[in-house]
Amino acid sequence: MQDPFDILVNGIVYSVFPEEDNVYTIFKAGVEFGKIEKDTENIWLKLNSETEMPMFDNDPETNQIGQAITNYVPEEEDEDEEFE
Image (cartoon, rainbow, N blue to C red; front, side, top):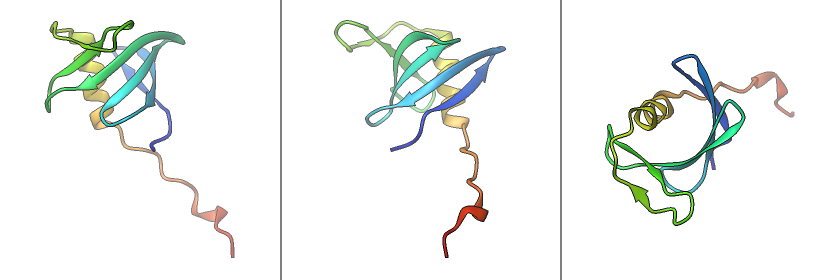
């Protein structure tokens, strides 16, 4: 599973915690924003906090977070730490 990572969207830091396939728990500036799920290539849906069912409203913030997740490239680990 992918490790948690941070993304920057419109000057706000979001912490991303990957869960199952295409579902992520998001924290906005340290406060839980909620879970989001990838629907299509360009559409991301926020999940209802109680039922975890997708909410089909067009939320630009959720789509921007999702696009930043899609564009995220993990930092490469130091190869100096190899064991011989």
